[in-house]
Image 1 (cartoon, protein in one colour):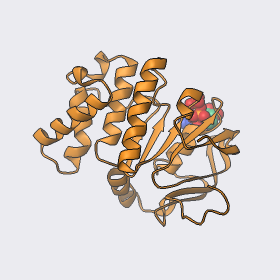
Image 2 (cartoon, helix red, strand yellow):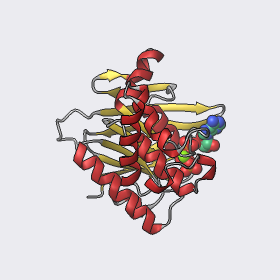
Image 3 (cartoon, helix red, strand yellow):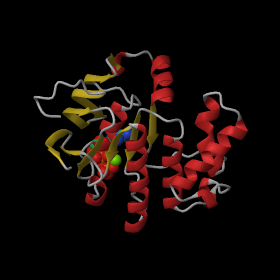
Image 4 (tube, helix red, strand yellow):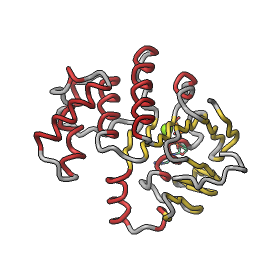
Length: 231
Ligand SMILES: Nc1ncnc2c1ncn2[C@@H]1O[C@H](COP(=O)(O)OP(=O)(O)OP(=O)(O)O)[C@@H](O)[C@H]1O
Ligand SMILES: [Mg+2]
């Protein structure tokens, strides 16, 4: 967002620092995400992208700095309120899977709805629609151990979007997909985000993926090196 822009961002991180043991993963990273905006976070392996995503999504607490979401300090919320807020407002696609191994694709996607009180039949019906959008409806009865990496990623995206979150955090959501599948998945993700006004924080090292974003920030050694407009 430019300096002249007076709109308050939906989500903002200021001067985040976070160490994993002796590794300083974040060293003063600041980033803003507007409502309905698609922001790409790029950078080399180890530059702190996943750590930044985890801090913004309230999964990891930063050592210093602030994370503000819709006017409230996420980094200061008690754990219970934080997990409620994550469940109601956020959808997360982790870099490494995290589908529930015992559940089929359909039930993995239905689960967040059932946790929010939707009955199983309705939840499974809506889950099927989301699998369809990401091209894996036919794999609905597979368990994660039986899926390809790409099928698991598409299922994880469907699960992150099924509840209609205000913000989706996606960490390398196309890392296991070929170029054509990446295009299909990104088109579906961008379309969904535009249609529903969902903000998307998209971590990627792939320029083809970053091109779907409105804006890109590049991390180098845990801080934002370049912030630019891509569209
Ligand atoms: N749980 C952890 N324990 C120890 N060090 C960690 C942990 N998680 C991350 N790190 C370190 O913190 C730094 C930033 O890691 P991070 O996962 O945020 O990078 P990244 O940009 O997402 O990398 P990649 O592109 O490979 O996914 C790296 O040096 C990494 O080795
Ligand atoms: Mg990562």
